[in-house]
Image (cartoon, rainbow, N blue to C red):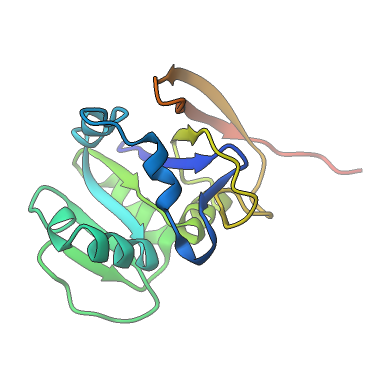
Length: 184
């Protein structure tokens, strides 16, 4: 069965964006020739799930070719119907049903590239199999939190940690199991 992974960067205090969806804080860890394991990670992926706001941001900043490169299927989670563009599907259905279906299909692994609403919906339904979180050495104090209130407790198994010259620390967890708490 295919696994669903999150590969994302956040500030030390847990924000994935500054107010107004500003990602400029990521520039403090940019270093020529350093991709923090992204190319190795993405080589095991053939399907991508992404929120519409994150998709729009990346298309605006990098261009459509980043997603529509013929190497992977892309599902943009949105509330607005749009026609398919190449291998990019604008998906308006149930995220849980989509992930359940994708996990049973043949192929490489699945990557969630954000945003916070999609990530927290996946966490709420315990659909993520691994979390690879790069902690950027900055405290933002405000913005978009990676983990929102209301997600169920989940036990994680540490797979690896890596530190880099830029001060970035990458933590790789496998989701072990769900936790059921008995309330008396």
